[in-house]
Length: 87
Image (cartoon, rainbow, N blue to C red; front, side, top):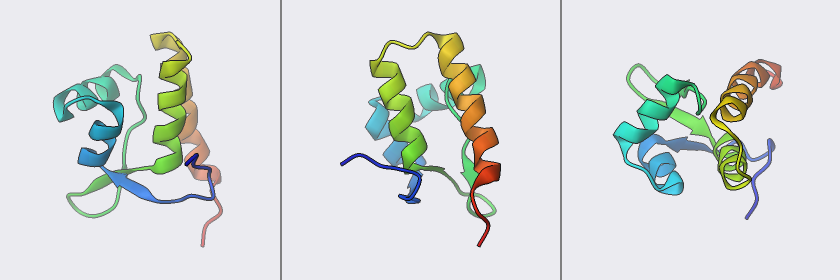
């Protein structure tokens, strides 16, 4: 199932790591390196990622994006979050 921006399901850390096939430490390393978008805060001590962002990053990895391209895409995703219609 392909996700879209209308699919606003949030994925928790363990789900994202599983989808990427990496451990939690590796996922946080990718975020620190800037090649994966930062999570959205969903509580005082909880974070998650929009499902469509995770799917887009997986597609970019499969397509062979360089780290620079992944970083640019991740940065743009975070910027695009501000454009989501506020409820």
